[in-house]
Amino acid sequence: MNSKRGFSSVVFTLVVLFFYLPLVILILFSFNHSKTMSWGGLSFRWYEELFFHSRTLWNSVFNSVIVALSSGLISTIVGTLGAVGISWYDFRGKRMLQVAGFLPLILPEIIIGVSLLIFFAGIKLKLSLFTVFLAHTTFNIPFVLLMVTARLEEFDFSIVEAAYDLGAREIDALLRIIIPLAFPGILSGFLIAVTLSLEDFVITFFVAGPGASTLPLHVYSMIRFGVSPVINALSVVIIAATAVLALSAGNVFKYIVRK
Amino acid sequence: MRRNAGPLYVAPLALWLCCFFIVPLGIIALYSFMSKGVYGGVVHRFSFGGYTALFNPLFLTVTLTTFLIAASSSVITVLLALPAAYFIARSARKNLWLFLVIIPFWTNFLIRIYAWIAILGNNGFLNSLLLATGITSHHLQFLYNKYAVLLVTVYTYLPFAILPLYSTIEKFDFSLLEAARDLGATVSQSIFRVLIPSIRGGITTAILFTFIPAFGSYAIPQILGGSDSLMLGNIIARELTVTRNWPLASSIAMVLTVVTTFGVVLFIRLNRFQTVTTAPEAFTAGGVDGDEQ
Image 1: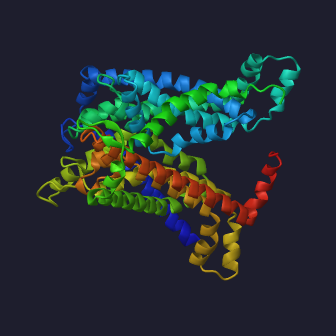
Image 2 (image 1 turned 45 degrees about the horizontal axis):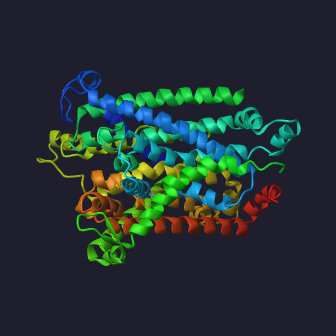
Image 3 (image 1 turned 180 degrees about the vertical axis):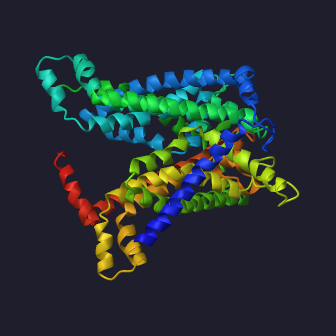
């Protein structure tokens, strides 16, 4: 027993080192004066370059945020309504819809990217930020569906039936019973959707038009030119921003669940 | 059910999935049976060309490489994840360790890939270190081969293996291990004949969570791979954008889709079979049956 726990703690320590070492090196070298990965003294020049001389980069950040928020919102609405229908109602083709709502979760991203690219070419829709929005909403919907369905499973349909019996219209039942009940699931669905959208590279790579670069696409184009200290600085900003966002999202979430 | 508002609720979902998922997938299924146009794209004429082209040696090599990279990265990942998850599940500070495992993956996927370029690149950290200490006198090439692809694939999917393994190991009754030891089993016997069979479900989930994304991988081999690590995803992209052989790109995409779906269906069957055959799980599942009518 003990030898096994000794062994497992060694492996766990190595795994944590493996996870953090690359990030620690990025953080350290973001303060490096030299342009290469050998130490040339402490400096903030890459942060200065990042914040004051990287207009196209910030443009791509702006694009990313717009796509993340809009696709997060639409996928949350479509996914939540769909989850209510699937969890609490019976209708023809329900099984097929469930499969169609699950399949995008397991298919490789490149399949979604390629099929959408061919589809957009077929309907002669020009690639732009709008096609990125359509693609992101498509891969986000299944995640919202999953989160909200999981939340709704904890409740009985009889709550809604009681509301009907007391004279509630469908819209009352939705706005005053279903949505408040499912809210933690809806919120986590929205947060996952926004995160996945900000994170996505592969699908965006296929469906983004000229001038519709998102942050991951911009980072990709920078990586192709090799090591750039500006990316080091950018990484630190992203790490800090995600930590702050995740912590505050966690607190908001706790507050809502407690309420 | 008094009223059936179901179709109303699912209408936007059904419409969206139909337009942007089922129809596009149907189009590539159709295109895979069409002919290649002279200037790229497709000509609407039935042909098996997309599929017969799959039997050329280059494509078969790429399929084999893809399978080997996905399989070995998933085996390495699970071998690392098993003890790590075991450690977390048996620790008093589970939440702290889980948090520690998840945090690095809040950073952007491309930033994590870039971090490895910054370390292993020709002008990267490792080369600078080796040159400065005089261990080597010239730059070493660590990137653009299958080992780099393997390393970063393991790095990317390790948390996806640790989490499901953790949740099954956590439910495992550790007094069974002590019982096995009391009955004279050695440490390795108690692990391989008591622990591992009981957490089989978690192990298959972990393998699936790493094998499937690795099999459909595009970005990692595209950025960190070389000629020895061309994967199916890269060939699809190349046929689509460079060679513009859309029927071939579509047929490879269909192969990926079918392999992935088959893997998942097999996995679900295996898991169902397990719930029926393992007594303790069937026992706890009894409570759920009441809800189904």
